[in-house]
Length: 207
Ligand code: AMP
Image 1 (cartoon, rainbow, N blue to C red):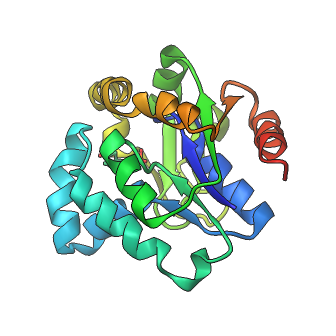
Image 2: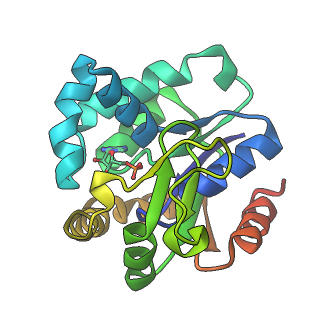
């Protein structure tokens, strides 16, 4: 099954995508992760993307469309995948439709105040991709899974969070209607506790 996880930053797309991918045995394709890796490795794509990401803006469509087109051509995508964080504009969705057939779009819905709280308290492990909220950590700064240092992403700092939400409402939220009109959209409540949200996603996917 070829699936898109749609939703604002902080809705839990990444966390849920990891779990659902594990359950279904398909890869998670996160454009945010791919771009952050490119920045860390200092590739030309990373260098071009960094300023946009640091401001909370979207990276140009042409850059992310090429990344996803190449990634979906890999053999591990043949039995399905979850796109996490792509598409984020109508132009990206239209381009995607020219090289992929999407079966379901899961919109993970959360209100802005909760998103601000989640994102500004989020801490991530750059070594294994683990994600935490400061309220779970009891002051610890280490990843429970692999022991590496946890960091706050630069774009999770307060002022960048607000611009990411503005960008989401202006450029990405129109995709909800785009996919509803195509009969692909299912919605889950992303404010549910993590396990309940996971169960709701499996249920709407019929998995
Ligand atoms: P994420 O980890 O999905 O929140 O993405 C982090 C940042 O990467 C975003 O704020 C954008 O700057 C950039 N990014 C990720 N995916 C896309 C996309 N599909 N289109 C444009 N920019 C993206």
